[in-house]
Image 1 (cartoon, helix red, strand yellow):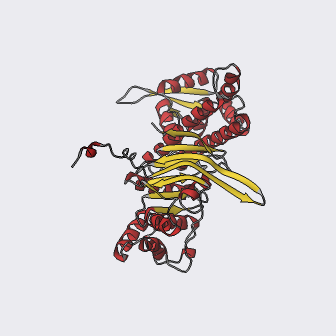
Image 2 (cartoon, chains in turn green, brown):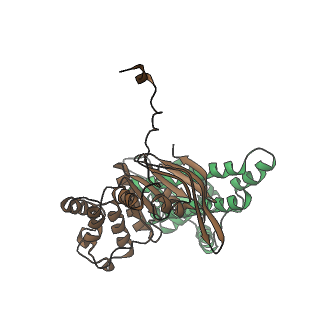
Image 3 (tube, rainbow over the protein chains, first blue to last red):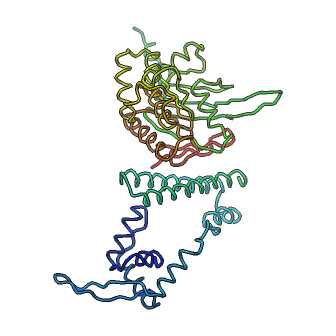
Length: 168
Length: 242
């Protein structure tokens, strides 16, 4: 959450609710929607770390709003984040640990575990399809995010197949 | 009439399903080698049901589709279509049943290059006994659904790969087949064309079309009511979306 907020603020100063809307509109329905409380907590921490600063802006008809902007340190932190490569695929996979360890303890059958996990992925895939259909035409970023998630799911399913071929 | 009337008749036939295979076996023999592509597959498809068949390459999923669709003969086992055992029919009768009741779509469109798009779609309908007028109506409806109305008079070669595949799907559905057999119908398509093909599959299924579809793409399979996984020529998993 920290980095995307910093990146949004690198474009222009904003208050908490604007940041929440910007995340939702850019990444669409598949993106876990941040709740406003989470955003304020994160902004407070960023401020304590010296990466953003804020000031109250008076509004005539409403309560004041607190507008955040990046500090010089915040700008450097965003630049460093943009510059470094992001994490690759996970090595620590919870399902894989189950698949290997549970049968050794006599707790489960590998083929059953694989099938159960497969069904879970099919359901997730269907959910993603429905999300896409219900949205009609989406922004490119939101559509690509969905597509990426689907490709990851497909890779997980292909991997289950490999596990089935070699283990069962 | 006598008391003999009380004698119970033959056991009632099981509820007819669209498609049923029993202990289906397919062996390929070449140079003294025997490969068992299907090793006793029991599959059932209800009327109007959409079933996806998945599995690693070599698991027998395409073979299953070919044998069920009469494109290859079974080595042993039974195939029932709409309550009728079809693997025992004469070649000619089986061909008539297929033309009437089955539509096919494959990974490549295989349109007839010397005919227009419209004629490609209408031909199988006319071959299956539909009147020329009905065939034309159905063709117009399908091409309209697929956004291809303005291509009706074009030669297939003038169409993009995605458009050709959509025409192939329209052709497969033109005669209102009881069963659509689809082998990797989106295998060569990009994401946008895949979406269009899936949309039509979903819509025809919602109208009652039974579909048996082979794919390795979970995005495609997750549109089905049920997913069967084949492994090594056998059913390893048969699961319905709840």
